[in-house]
Image: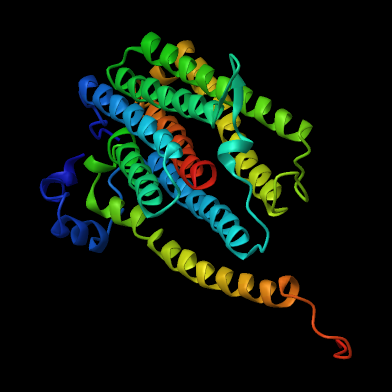
Length: 113
Length: 228
């Protein structure tokens, strides 16, 4: 096919390359912060920024036709449901484990079946 | 091609989206090899997300303490304990390889065969370095007693998650190294100059898509497994 290939100035690639380095350094820096909302928020922020640069610029998604962008980027939205369900399920399993296995032993006489 | 006329004009908006999907012709106006690579990467996205969600579930559900990755993966360099230093170096190596790959795609479309092929080989070399460092990391952890079923640092599920996720990612990097070397060799040999549509170097972009995806997955593993 005689479609024009993805041809972009090298300068743009160098800029994104630099930004990826910078954000990687920043995410590495979060390791020295205290655990908490700020740290986790920054980890996610830098992760999503880096992912956006890689998909958008390096993989040229920003210049693709909308038909392809939607076909590729919309199915993963389903994964957000999987993540949500598994967080709820994981919390439940942890609670049951703590109640059944970690809690102090029951008094004598109450036989388990 | 000739029929691209109207659809190309507004390909970047919702009108173009409807036109591409509703017309009685192929939906994706891109080379089929590129479309198939994107679909493969989409399926791979689901695989890696499932692994990461599985790891997240195990980590949430366990009643024992999750090992502190910052300490587990620390390395003693020049007498100083550096947390996660090897992982940080691996991250930079992989990003560097992504940069050389993006340049290879650029030179490929310019028809500069020698430059494109050598940049691809450079990318493959960075990939090999990455896998080498991963092998070193695995060796170190195995000697410290980390197994898929137990480890001296805390929750048992740590080892299973670690070997599964980094192993599958390392496998992807290794496959990518082989893929890049094969394509670079074909470029140097002049395979893409011959036949119908000669001088077409979209194969470099397709190989690049795979390589950038491997880097993309590492971004998520780095954030969710090592840093969290």
